[in-house]
Length: 372
Image 1 (tube, one colour):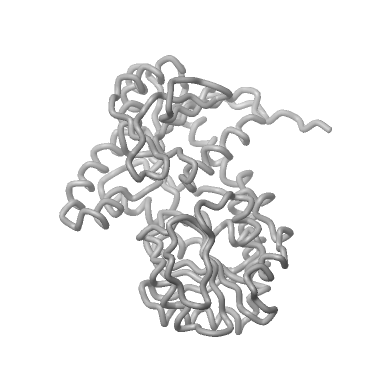
Image 2 (tube, helix red, strand yellow):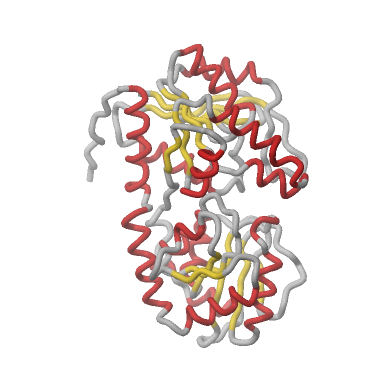
């Protein structure tokens, strides 16, 4: 069975979608009967080691993203790849090309609804755009043979729009890369923190929906004895005395080291479609302080962290204090066990493969035997 993923969500800093699209072929490679290809925009046309690119212009201020303008080349490329199942990872031109290719080739097409397009656009264009974009999303995703959503909150939104055949398919985390063993005292020392300072971290882009200004308010409420480090691009330059930041994009291995070396993740995002960094933090053995909204509230189960009211600095600060007053290290150990049991790639990707086999009727032979 040949699986082809198609998306424009593939750039150096593209977060969870790229993480998924890099983990997926590595896991599928253990099955001799499976073949994977990824079709994305690039500087030029080419195909190497399963990654195929089509020329597309860069988006201005788009963090490396490219935006395809013509559907024809994408349709032709998909036809040449001869997939048995196609998965579209975004709601833009590649998704429409995938549907066209599926109809021509007579193969099923899966739509993975990674991002909430109406919400993202509405936060920038204003609420007037919500109804128009809801209509667009419904029209597109009703055409897929099966729709995957990374969380219950996203699946519920699609169902409210009248989209059927929606299944929750969470993302996963590399529990070997994100591991408590990466804890490094040099991280705390490098920030000038003593052993009694409560060391919080946020990792991700400093985009509007992450509510970084709210995190700064929280730190002003907490004051001396607490420190927050912001790891990621687009972070503000003016910070309270108890906040520091990384400069620019932070590679995954460095994010893992920072997470494992801190005491807890602080996350104020209230409209997350999944919240992969929450799982990465938990895999590193630290608990999470998040908000009772969006997909984060699905991930932070009892015993793995605390949830506060969204949009309220005093509520988040109270949750942080409560975390450190109530066995936060044991919470971190529970968080690690929870992620390993439910969100390692070996746990979530067999479910994905089940969707493909149900749609295609193809029989999947067992994985290759390990050597050495």
